[in-house]
Amino acid sequence: MYCRPPHVLPAVVHPTKCCVNHTFSTVEVPHIHPSHTTNVNHTMYQHKHYFPQTQSMVNQVSNQQFNCSGPGPAPMGPMGQMGPMGQQMGPMGQQMGPYGYGR
Image 1 (cartoon, rainbow, N blue to C red):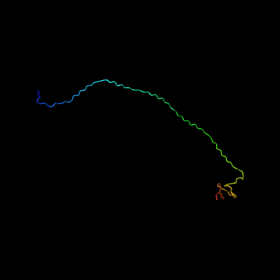
Image 2: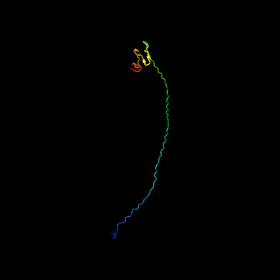
Image 3: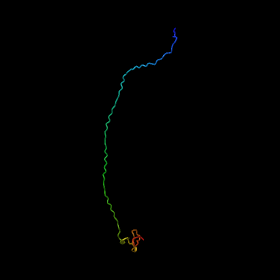
Image 4: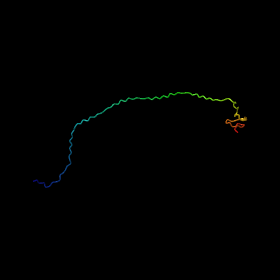
């Protein structure tokens, strides 16, 4: 039969000791560095503007027609045409006074 010791104290628990085991392996990682070349062809359009100018000349000619048959024109005085009875007439046909002013 098993006999227990007369006095058993509680167990003392110590901190856990951590151990680390390292294992190594080799893994190949391919690195691809692509390259692209673009060839650019440049075309320059030079827009050159010209402004030729021509000139022309126009001669304007006027003429007047007069019917000169019948009595001649009334005599002109210093202030305009002579009206009936020898009175002087102004440019708008009004009778003129002795000093050239309208009546």
